[in-house]
Length: 98
Image (tube, rainbow, N blue to C red; front, side):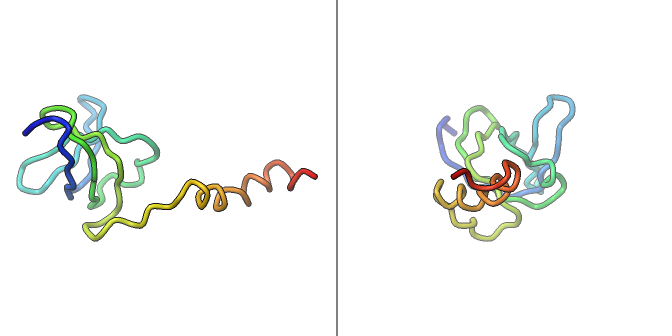
């Protein structure tokens, strides 16, 4: 299996304390170590699907992760994400500057 290959795999997300990385257990005894950035602690113990690029023997650099084995949620544009975050940001700074 060459490096740089894209994979989409589903399994249970676990934390491997020995090496300090997340591990995706596939159920047949196989597993991938996954390099995930961002908040993912709430996904530990859940069935997730990971989409990413192989960067080592059994290491995936994760591009997307979602709960379940269904189709991925739609990607949102950076502008849409800013619109969703704006109300909480505006409340923290005391409203919209004029």
